[in-house]
View (cartoon, rainbow, N blue to C red):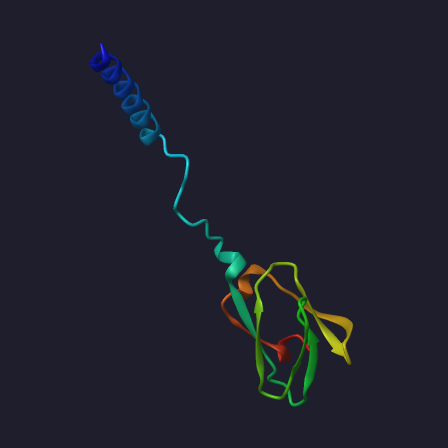
Length: 107
């Protein structure tokens, strides 16, 4: 009688294990959004030093300097003066991702 009860218990356990193994609920594949991690470079190709606000912080770009910015469509790149935002220079769009943007084109 003990052998039959043990056999039934093991049968039930193994039947449940195979049912759960056929339908995994955990996915180990990373969910990567390439646009969220993309960036672009802003290059100061003008003859003067420029202060800008990148949407995340203030940056001073000396002549010939550059900075990398997260590429989020709709983000505004603005003039800055001593830690205060100024007029909009340009708005980021998807075509800028992974490229170098020259400030002289927008100033």
